[in-house]
Figure 1 (cartoon, helix red, strand yellow):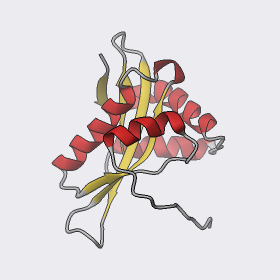
Figure 2 (spheres, rainbow, N blue to C red):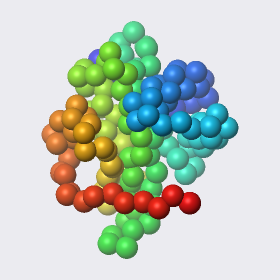
Figure 3 (cartoon, rainbow, N blue to C red):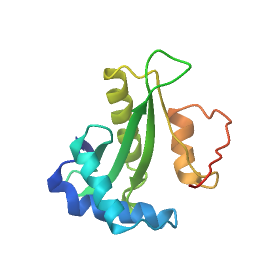
Figure 4 (cartoon, rainbow, N blue to C red):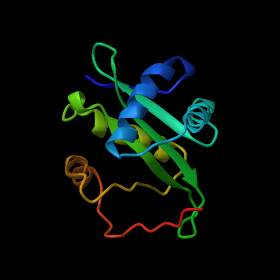
Length: 146
């Protein structure tokens, strides 16, 4: 059974290991000071929020981070699920689904109109889950680096 809890300062080392796995999966590099700043903002729980998934032995197996923002198409905020990662050896056991459900419940309790997220087109394993718990909107993501 997977348990989900808000990320606290005592989760730092386990969170950081999962964060590193997430960055490796996306072939991304984030400076250490940005990683530490991000963790602090998640623990502060004011603008960034986070939860950690643990297996029945208490081992940290997944993380999720989210934030809310104002929207022009709703009177409620939108909840953006920014990062979701489950350790490779724990995939398929329900942790990803539980982390998404946690964010959905949080968003409902905080008046958000919807939860949304992005993923890479080739992320087939995750997309199989996403197709079961959400609707693919057909939008394509663009960005400008600054």
